[in-house]
Structures are given as structure tokens and as C-alpha cells.
Length: 252
View (cartoon, helix red, strand yellow):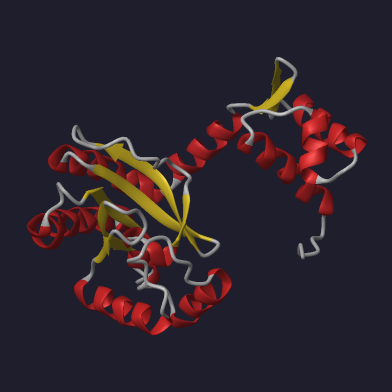
């Protein structure tokens, strides 16, 4: 059952926007049927969004405009974490040849806010803004391990421990043991836990108040990221970059 919100009309607005994105464009009738709302209600929301220039229309279908891209990118550019990590992301991608990302926690999920691709990176479906359950991949676990204990419990209770692959951790005790290992070693590993055939490793980024602000990640195919890279060379590169990002982020 949907939660009761102070302004329910906003829920409808975002239902409309999300449905338009999921369908790569949609008309009023299609949206009304998909969302289960009267056409007149959907039309009012569509018209308002169109007049505010958050929607455009092409061939009878509405699409979101680049205003959302502008707002998201402006928010990212203004984050101290991103400002501190931007150059390190590019350097890691160049040095490893793989995908590199910067991830933060939002509403109990790990959300990628920046990515860079090395010259060997395979074309996997990873993009800025993608949310992940935190227990399924190294970037999420690297953040989760350094959150307060009550917040860790809250996230697990809210989102559960859903299985993504045969290697996904779905047992709470096993996850807590791994989080303790991450705290001791200051990095996290994901050996085909989110995507079969892919490995990732991540380090947390901690601010001067000992709060985890995000994580840096390298990920690539298992046939290229062998055990030496996975447990030694890439770990050293990430720990170095993580330290640089922390210094830059905490510097005033």
C-alpha cells in the first residue's frame, strides 16, 4: 500500500514522469491506463509539466526535457565529493583500462553519480544515477560498512537482502561478518555478486568527521581482473586514490 503523503498530487506527478521515462515517451491515454488514473487528471499534470518546460512533445508522445539533466549535473558539480574525486576517476580509468565509478548512498541504496571508462572497458549497462541494493556490490558494501550500526540495520530491514546471482550475500550474519572485514581492511570486494562474469572492488571515502560520504570503485570482467589485480594491484591503486580524494574533500 502506498504511503500517505502530505501532498499526494506530487506522487502523481512523479508517477507520470517515471512512466514517461520507462516507456521512452508516452501519450496521455497510455499514461492514464498505466498509472490507473483518470485521463483528465493525467492531462492536468502533463499540461503543467509541459508549460513549465519539464516535458516536450514529439510525434504525439511526451518526453522529459534536459532540465532534469541540468539540475542533476549542477547538483553533482556542487558536491565536494565529486569535485575531489573527478580527476582520480579519470586517472584510475586510464591506469586500469576498466570502468571506474563514484557512488553515494541515497535512501538506503547505492547510487552511482559519476563514471569513467578505460580503453578496455566492456559495454555493460552502467550509467550515472543507477541505484543498487547496497549488499550486492562492492561500492554499496564499502559505504554500508562505515555507516552507524542502527543505520545498517535500518537499510537491511527496509530493502532486504535480495539475491542477484548465486554469489549474492543473502544471509544477515554473513553480511555483518563481511562488513567487519571491510572495516578492518578499508576496502570491499564483489566477486560476481551483482553481475555474473563481473568483479568489482571499492574503497570508502571518509570525511573529517569520520562520516562515510561515498566510495570509489573499479569493475570489470572476471577474465581480465585476475586474483592478483583483484586482491593486490587494483586494491593499492584504489587505496591511493581514496586517500587523495579524502584529502581534497576535507581541504578548506
